[in-house]
Image 1 (spheres, one colour):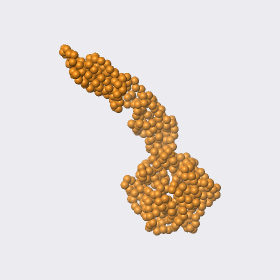
Image 2: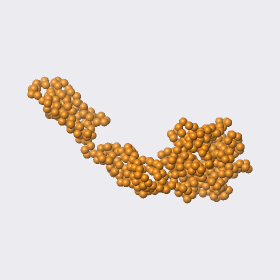
Image 3: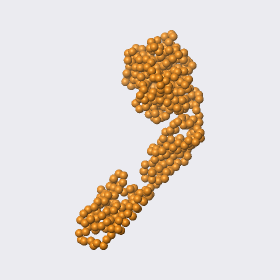
Image 4: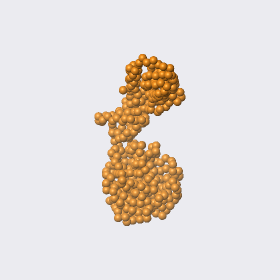
Length: 500
């Protein structure tokens, strides 16, 4: 029932009381009393000033003070309906009985009148723009609407597509943005927003239309890009066409594709911890591997740790401080593989199950005192590649033939609390000849080559290059191993590359 109707019924009831309580008794000179009270706004109890207070039958008319209080004196004894009236509020009536030589108290809680209240403006659809083709299975919807009276607005988003009869409705949205995934690749979508102030009827926007790119089939490159405060994973083909795989609302990074499984593993922050996830190559069917209560990846710096998903294997290998674990991609079969003897932390790992080789990078709590070495699955050390040298390293990858290891090392030996590197170069170590080759040809001065990996044919390396100021943009390059002047920019504002 509307508030105005309730007030009307209350007035009818008060008048009936007055009608049946009338009598012919004469009023003596002492047969007077006082009506006192206060008036506040319903909901927040804010005192209302200058409210007109009157009675039926008629006595005196007064107005509330700055505290919302009022007093009517010398009111003849009897039954009354007390009225409180002020603009922009619903007039209210309260029954009371005045007794001789006494005061009665009346309290009003006035409801805001919505008679002249205007609805929100028609929502204007901002993004996706009309007929835009999204390069992702995630849509960030944005619109604009205001309320003339400044009332809170609640929105409802309705989403349809041309692939099925589903109608998705997202209600009780209080912001003018909404993120949704996963979208259907290759589909055309239709969306509409309604706005309501819970006073007037909802206002509908026009219907917006957008499309989603068809499923990428030739994207062999993966990389991470910073968007806002989060890392976001992308795939790309050899022509540079990019496709966003993870949401901008979560921090996801370090992608690794497994060709046999045709899935991508990656790290994602869930609060203060990091979990391993997998997804299809189009970014759909995201599944958590390291589940609640299980061992999770950890190290001296979560941005510097790495994991391995060997080809033709269902096991993912990851470090947890000084231990190396494996876990099946379905989250089952967690197993301890190796533990360092000196308590040093494992930061990076690459595994070849077919060759019985595990390449490891270990370091202290600050990320230094680095050792790079290989072991077999029994824990026996096979080769020591890098040890006893100051400075930072990053990136660790076995070649396709399992005969070479690629990594990056800061040749200045510089060490700092923020893990800054001054001249990181890429090195290839030959396990057969025990030789190391610097392949950072023509690296610009003042920059670092980081996070190297072999190409699928082992003829190239893909890596991240960035200024050594530790804050500048990072870009992904490739270089043909052994060929001078072959450094090629692949992706701007990108890092943590993978090439399968």
